[in-house]
Amino acid sequence: MGQPSHRVELNSYFDGGLLQFIGWNILGALITTCTLGICYPWSLTMIYRWKTEHTVVDGRRLRFDGTALGLFGNWIKWWLLCLITLGIYGFWLFISLEKWKVKHTTFR
Image (cartoon, rainbow, N blue to C red; front, top):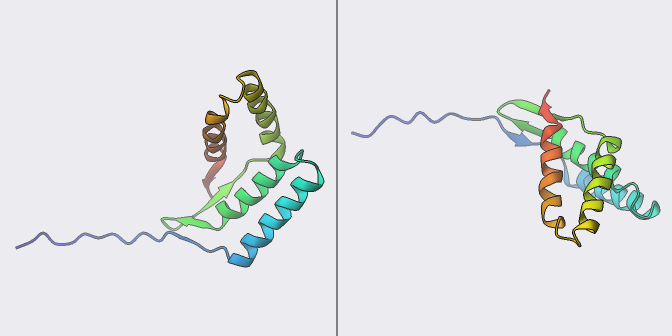
């Protein structure tokens, strides 16, 4: 006889909608374009906050507490590192951004 199944149902889901997703991305693109890229960190945090706060993991909703100002300082540092290393740091920029996002993501 086989082992009994001990399957645990996790209550994880994403409850954001397509129109919201499109709207937030259009707004982020407009803000970034109108400010010639200066407000790109604000756009990133705005969109990431929307994604995070519409995500539920194991029955617990996520929360994002990062700010555009907090990201802006890192953003300047990361781009300076890209310039100094002639673009080589660009390979790590994505990882640095993901680490920053995770650092500011918690459960409500």
